[in-house]
Structures are given as C-alpha cells and as structure tokens.
Length: 94
Image (cartoon, rainbow, N blue to C red):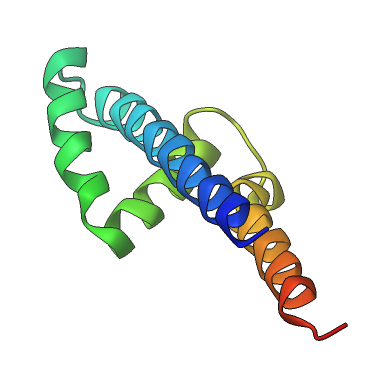
C-alpha cells in the first residue's frame, strides 16, 4: 500500500505541475499580451518556484479559465487531503 501511495502522490504532483504551467502561460498571455511561446517559458520558471507557482496557478485558474475559488482549491488541495487520510488509515495497527 505504501508503494502505491507514493506512486499516486508522484503522479498527482506531475499532473498538477503540468496544469499549473498551462494555466500560468494562459494567464501571462492574456495579462501581458505576449506570444504563447514566451508566456510558456515565463510560466515554466514561475511554476518552479513553489509558493509563487501555486499562487499564480490558482489565480490563473480563477481568472483565465473562470473557475470558482472552491474548484481551484479542490484541484490543489483535494488530492492531498485524500492522501493524508489514506496514509493515516495505512499507518494504523490492526
């Protein structure tokens, strides 16, 4: 079970990181009017900075894609809450 939780966590981090790069590039393209290629390069570096990338991705999902605060929060925090619960259930002594 522990190996499968690590695999799920790793895959989810890759998915959220990819979505953050896409969201940030859309946001920078719309906000600054720069070409998509340059927006992607800027968003790639911004997303690598943990707190700044999360905030920019969260804000990009709300502003550019029209998501609500709760939808964007569920994307970022929902899987982590599920993994914490599964880790707690896995660590219990039977």
